[in-house]
Length: 235
Image (cartoon, rainbow, N blue to C red; front, top):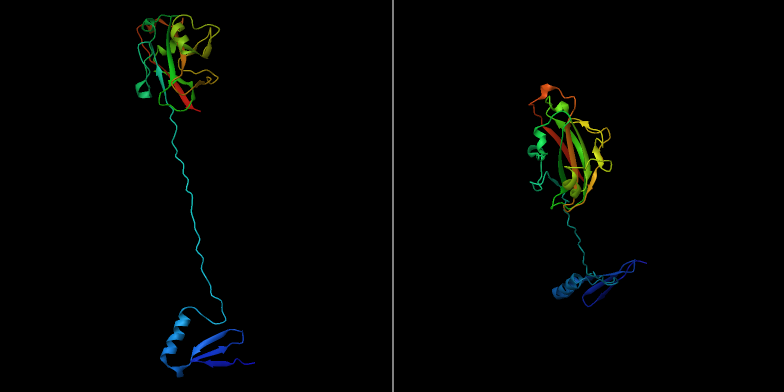
């Protein structure tokens, strides 16, 4: 049935077919009532419809972060009793302290020196070190020189390298108890790396150089420069 309108005290209430009702002002009852209707509508009151409410909620969050830094790894060496530990880059190679005969070699003569390689005090991680290259200045005298090298504790190389370190009990890095290599050649097998803990613990090396017994007379008075390189790698 069609919706019916009811009139009451200046309002017209009209029922809709969906069951809701709407309120309109009856224009015949003056402006005061009209204002009242507008106030009711502005406040959200609608006959036949429930009111809605927006609920607030507490919220919070947690933020986390981390700090990071790179490790430090560096090595240094000591090249004789008269020198302290220093870093020796290619442009400032350390000079080994060979026995006096190094500048007075004759065919079959030998000369020895020692060095100790360790991590620097600033190093924060362990690593390893190995003999990585050996070369000469390609002089005539260099072609008549040979070398061998063994690895031992720092105390042993300091106390025995210049006397009796080269025996069958040594850990040879190059050559052996009765063999030598040319001064421009590494062993056929890559030298084994020695562990280097952080905090200044070192690895000792004893080096022996000799002039070949068949060196010609033409080499008298000649000189040569030999270079050995040790490479450290962090773990």
